[in-house]
Each structure stands twice: as C-alpha cells, then as structure tokens.
Image 1 (cartoon, rainbow, N blue to C red):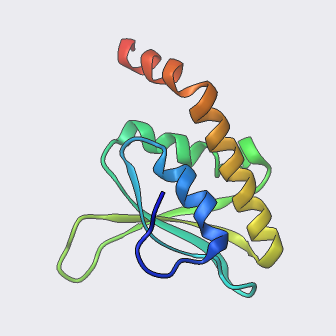
Image 2: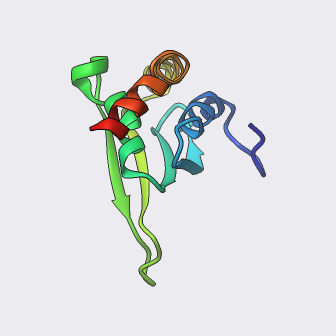
Length: 121
C-alpha cells in the first residue's frame, strides 16, 4: 500500500495488515521512536470486522496487551480509534510485528470462512 507523507518505517507492515481488514482504514501512526508507545489510528466502517483487529491485540490471544481507545475532537467529528502498545522500543516493535503476522495469517487463511459464518448467523 502507498501512504502519503513521511511514515515511520516500523509502522508500515502493521498499517498494511490493518488496512487489509475490510471496513478498517488507518489514518496515522507513530512507532514511538524507541522511547514512546507504538500507536496506529484508524476509522471503522464495519463493527463486525473491527473485531478481527481487537482479537489480535487481546492478551488472551497473543500474550500481551495493546489498548484500543476512541476519541473525537471539539467539533464532534466522527469517532476515531487507535490501538496503542503498553511497551516501548524493541518490545513494542516485536509486538507490532506479531500482530501483523497474526492479522495477515488470518486474512490469508480464515477470513472468507469467518465472514461467511457471520452472514449466516
């Protein structure tokens, strides 16, 4: 995927993976530059599919926790979401890479069946 402007190279794989999820579009990101948390901001168009992202940041499924937060601005624009690591530096980068791998594996191997199950249920 092509992104406008400058982007932390550490964020590109995770943003690419998140953007594979239908109805979830990243808007900005920051890797923390070694001394801050890793964050990816996004909008959602489909409540069903955002659960894929949330699944892969839940400690029950990956062994570490990232938070998902929601906010708006002073003019009450559409809600914007972001995920954020609870670690910094190499540990946060490694976790981002694990989330990336898990999302990509799911999208490659399980998404079609997962979506069909939700259409029937």
